[in-house]
Amino acid sequence: MNGRTHPLEAVAAWLLALLWLAPLAYAFWSALHPAAYATSFSLSAPWTLENFARAWHQAPFGRYYLNTVILVVLILIGQLVLSTLAAYAFARFKFKGSGIAFALVLLQLLIMPDVLIVENYRMIGKLGLLDTIPAIALPYLASAFGIFLLRQTFKSVPLELVEAARVEGAGPLQILWRVYVPLARPTYVAFGLVSVSYHWNNFLWPLIVTNSVEARPLTVGLAVFGAPETGVDWSIITAATVMTMAPLLFAFLLFQRQFVQSFMRAGIR
Image (cartoon, rainbow, N blue to C red):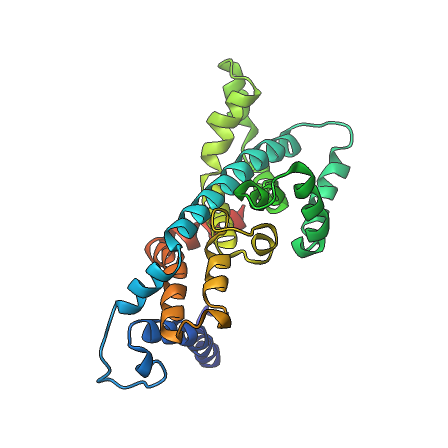
C-alpha cells in the first residue's frame, strides 16, 4: 500500500460531495432570489434578502432560536456531568456488578430512542412537564455513547499521574477534575459537537411533547411554518431553512479542523 488515492475513489468522493451539496446549493439559491426565480437558474436573476426578512417576521423564529439554544446547552451540561461521573466510576473503581452495569449501558446503544417514545411520554406526563423545554431534554441527559467514549479515554490515563495526585493529597473528585478531565479534552470536544448537532436537529420527540411557541425548538417551528396550509411560498420556506441550519453550518466551517482532529484523537484512544 503506497497511501495514494485510487482515481475511482476520488471520483466517487467528488460525486458524493456533489450529491450532498446539491440540496444545500438549491436552498441558498432559492432563499436568495425572488419566488419567480426559485426554479429558474438564470445568472441574471436578481438577488434579494427579502425572503429572510419575511420569514423572520411571519413566525417567531427569535423564540425558536432561544428555545433551541437553551435546550442544547441544558442537554450538553447534563450529559457531560453524568457521563463524566459514570465513566470515571466504570474506568477506575471496582464494585460489585460493575460489569453488568456497564453491559446495560452498552445495551442502550442498541436501542433506538424512537422505541421509548411512548414510555417517555407517559413519564413526562406524570411529572407534569409536557410542553416544556425540560420535557424535551430529560430523556437525553444520560448518554450511553458519552459514557462509553469517556470510559475508554479515562482508562488510557497513566496510573502514575493518578498516584502522583494522591501523594499530593488529592481526593477522588480532585483527581477527576485535575487529571482525567484535562487529558480528555479532545474527547469532550468531539462528544460536544455530536451532541449539539444531534439535538439541534432533533425533530420527532420535540414534536410530540410540545404544543406551544414557548417550548418549540427550531425544527418543530420550521415544520409548522412550512406546512402546506400556511400558504407560504417556497423561497420563504427555504430562507427559513437556511436560517435554521446556518449556525451549525457556520460552526462546522469555522471549526472543521478541530472537529476532525478531536474525532481522530478520540478514536485513537
